[in-house]
Every structure is written in C-alpha cells, then in structure tokens.
Amino acid sequence: MITQYQFVFDGLDRPLPSFWAYRLYAWLLTQVPPQVAEELHEVGEKPLSQHLLREPETGRTRWVINLLEDETAAAFRPVLEGLAEVPLHTGRLRLHCERVETKTAYQLVEEARAGEAGRRMTMRFLTPTAFKTEGRYAIFPQVKWLVHTLAMRWSRIFPELPLEDPDALAALERGITVADYALHTTRYPLKNIRIPSFLGNITLESRLAAPMEEIWQLLLRFAPYAGVGIKTTLGMGGVQTAAESRYNREE
Image (tube, rainbow, N blue to C red; front, side):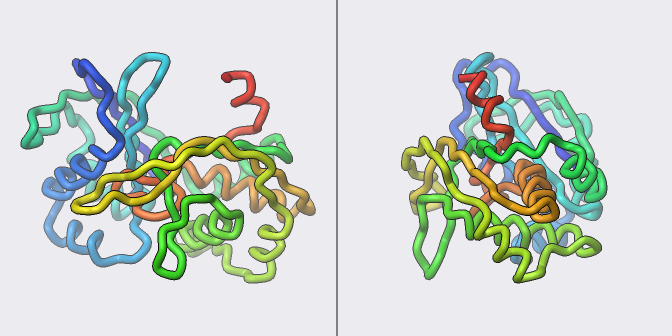
C-alpha cells in the first residue's frame, strides 16, 4: 500500500527551493531507526519518493512524501504523524500535515479501468527531472524511459501484480508518442554537483488497444507517487498527470 503525506510550511516569507528536499530527506533519515536508514542507502529502487512543490496561487511550499511499501510507512509513520517542526542547521521550519492518502495496487487498477481514457495526457514535471543512460544525464523525456522506469518501479512495489512482460512494454513504447512539449533545462544542486535536468510539460498521445491503454493509464496514475527519472528520493522527478484538457483550462 502507498501512503502519501502532504505537509505545508507555515510562516515562510518565500518559497523553499526544490533542492531543499534533499536537506529535509537527510533530516528525516536521522529520525528513523539506523537499520531503516541503512537499508534505504543500500536498495536500488527506493520505497520512498519525496519532493517540494511550490503553489503559485497561494505562494505556499508543500512537502509531498510517498511511502511506497507498508514496511516503509510503518517506519516513518511515528515521525510524520504529529510532525510540526523540522530543525535544520539554517533554522527551524514550522509545518503542518494537510493531507494523508493511501492507495492500494487494486485501487489504482480500478481507477485506471474506470477512468476516462484520454488519448492525450499531460505530464507536468514539478521538480527538476533527469534520466541517466550510458553513464550520461539525459534531459529530454523519451517514452521508452518513462514506460520502463515506471513499470520497473511498479513491479518492485507491487510484486503480486508485476508489469514485466517485455512484449507488453514494447507495445506500450510503440503506441505512445510525445505529441507536444514545453520544457526548459535547469540544474539540481546535490552535494558537490549540479545535475542537468528539465522542468515543464509534455503531452503524451496514445494509440493503444484497450488492454494496453489500461496499463498505460495505470502507470500514469502511479507516476505521481513513484516519481519519474533518477533521484526521486532526493527531491527530483516530482510529477502530476492529467487529461490534456485539464491543464489547458488552467493555463
């Protein structure tokens, strides 16, 4: 089961930059048992994603934490429930929990089946996002990377419902195209490096048979919890997805 916590920071005179998510994550690891922190350092696909989201309409900064497994949720729940302050070396940040949401694999599957199958979907990259291929950072979201990384994370989190059929993944890759995009490059400061990355929107158009379209809709609903690309535990790759018309109305 996925558990998502959304915190809002209080009393800030300016939004927190997205890279502060790394500082918050580092603090968070000091609050859980050492073996939990050590396991998070060691595992490949992390059972946790988190990012900072600025709300332009309110000026508030929101901290979104996704605990992707029951064991991870159990370890972090005592820290997050009732959390009102984060002490960092730069000062104390006050915050309050505004929302807690849980999702099971079967709920996401049912939502994908019952939802409106929009053939054109927008993916909004909320925090700097990047992929890594052949040892290099890639700063444009190719369909292959989106499909395979989301399917891999799904199978890691929900092994009872794996998405590992190479033929199905190849069919998804062939049936989805990037129809439009509005992206710009940026850098994500992390330790002693500045990771090349991108922000903005892409429109994804699908031409898939009904069974494949359900899988694609499932991955789109999973993406806001799992994150996209590299270093989603450290604040990168936060996304929202919706039918294209929704974002068009907002803009």
